[in-house]
Amino acid sequence: MNLYNMILFIGMPQVVIIIVVVLLLFGGRKIPELMKGLGSGIKEFKNAAKEDDKDKIEDKK
Image 1 (cartoon, rainbow, N blue to C red):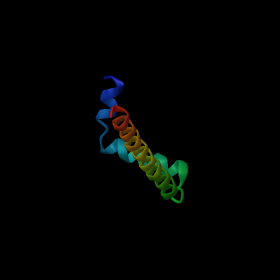
Image 2: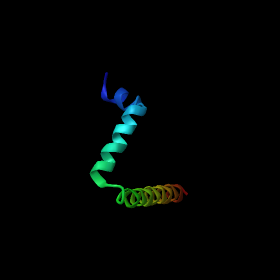
Image 3: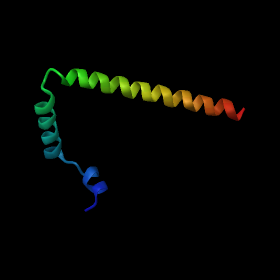
């Protein structure tokens, strides 16, 4: 089984193990801060991608 298939078929037991490990590493108080940072990073990435698409469209005109 290759890495792609292993990542693709993550089941519920693996998700629970990942959540437990994250809680042990960062603690319950840091998780909301991490998620907020992750959310703002994703939002910034989407905004940058939209701006890049607009720039490409304007360059074609």
